[in-house]
Image (tube, rainbow over all chains, first blue to last red; front, side, top):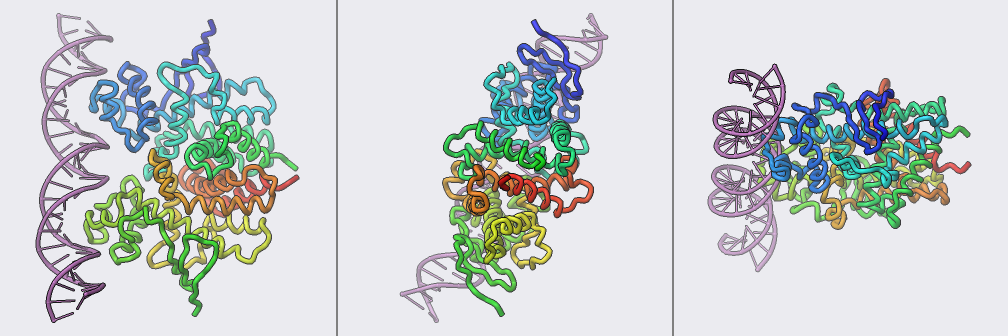
Length: 244
Length: 244
DNA sequence: TGAATATTGATAGTAAAACTATCATAAAAA
DNA sequence: TTTTTATGATAGTTTTACTATCAATATTCA
């Protein structure tokens, strides 16, 4: 039975039991008042908030509803998270940290940056997720849906500056820097590696959201196939960075 | 004094007095309960909601605050708009309709689709806006800031489907289709014209937001120059659609 | 001109959301 | 065993999001 710690250049992943994809992620302490991973109640908050934000949408999701679902109290949840916005960022940060872990894991020992980028795009669209086993705590497929539908709301607020000072967006930035690094490795002369990285990341979500909700804004409306988004992103990325 | 009606293929622009850029836009009736353009109170709601959403952010903006500012009452505003989400979409739709008008106006008589696309990108980043005169009702520069910071919130809700059925996103879709058409004119073989159009539109906002708020996610952090975003978008677009 | 209609302002009120505070009990740590 | 900590139960406040009612004032139109 494979059971080991991973020591990579990852700041946020502290432990991973790989066979059942049980990952421990070191979260920014500013995100919570009490560490939700330290108790059953906390874990319940995390796992059920993922389900409920997906079900109701972030605006209609409330701590009261969550408390009823997990048979606890509103006040109980407030002991863990200052407000629902912090909880959202917690979930998103978890996702980004986990995704960077996945990327490092899956591109490990691969030297060709172009192949690395292709793998990254596949991971970003979560097309690989058929193979990924469920975590009992975090349903990554649903969490991915939250990232698609609610992700931008983390930073599109008047609090960006303060939240950013508290490093709340670090996992997202880390991922962006990571991808930008590989882009620069592929083509050191390309002048916009970071902007291109955010473009690929954001579009992997927007194209998915549009495909499913406003299909005329995409070219994937009929088939609704994530594979087509993949092709679009590959085309977009490599057109930009391939030297003629 | 120039004063004429414009008859173009624009569904939403019904009247334009060009010398002082006074534009009348036909808005979707589902967006309001009473047409705000028909009264002073309504016009006040529009002009001041733009200022206040920009000042407070959409989440903290309330009809009560707006009522106090324009010295009317909460109930008075509710006579015009069902809720603040509809008001937001009203403002965004106005913007998109106006932008498509601007694009048609500025690319008129230009045959070269590549030049058309360059003009469109310039308009999207609103780099041209130094020259644009203020409307006494709509401050387009501030409205552009709202589109950047709050635009996605129009459709990233559990109401997308219903809102879409009411055609609330039509101006955005019209613009997307318009740009996609020019892309296809430039390169009829390019397989993702619509997705590329939304990518350019969305990135013109995201890169701007990131540049100003989370600069490490872009390559424009030091200079904070919209012109650099322009260059990025031009590069992104033409790399994709230029045949090798 | 006078009556009907529409628009706004003023006021009041409700339900839910977003918290905060307090106290008792149960479980875990010292 | 004592102390600390975590949770549950309950109650309360402020703000948001909205609805309802009525009077005053314009505007329309017959």
